[in-house]
Length: 266
Image (cartoon, rainbow, N blue to C red; front, side, top):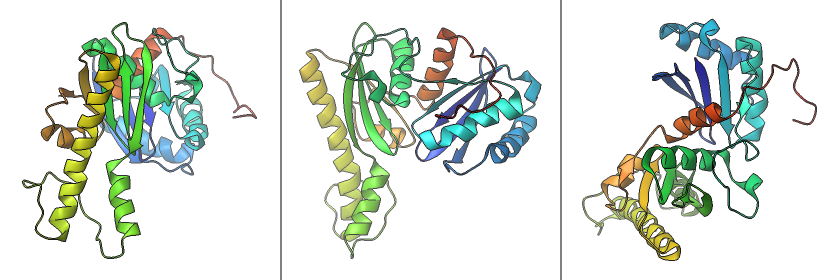
């Protein structure tokens, strides 16, 4: 079985794939100070509850946009499971061209989404990932990653609005039935929700115009279903896109040999 770890800015998702299907998916808040032993106790309990023995795990892969979390996640794989994890990076065999100025600057999550989306849905396509940042990643008809756009995430915008404007409260995100709010909170909810729908639709339209032909649009991330409700430009939502990208990447690359200590320059 394969342990897949997707470490984002807000949450870390752990999942196990048995070669046919996902056996379990679990998430925990991202904390760069959490130790490998803390992860091990927590994850070991969840594996046991789902009938998965530690000895059943034979491979591991980590994708992260939080470098500070990598040390403890790597130690988790080595010390608790006896596995050297494959680390998603631009230098691996992705099976497609990374056609940007500096491939090493592209977040692993964006490449993983591109890999899984093209494999599943074909191209050309746009992947919109609603995470801590809202990212738009563009894949051409051949599967090459050709760039994209990065905008602040919805929750970041809500928090910034609350922090910067003394009289504006912190609000939850939901789809309002009306665009015109008749008091402060409905007006804020409208601005956040319909403003983000407008941002998404505007960028999709501009990306398509620049590319020169229609493109499929796939959305992922926690708020993808909510935004997709308000935008016909989003054709499908896929909550497991990044995990599937990690699984596919591990199939294309050999397992690294087990190392007993963390390199000094990590």
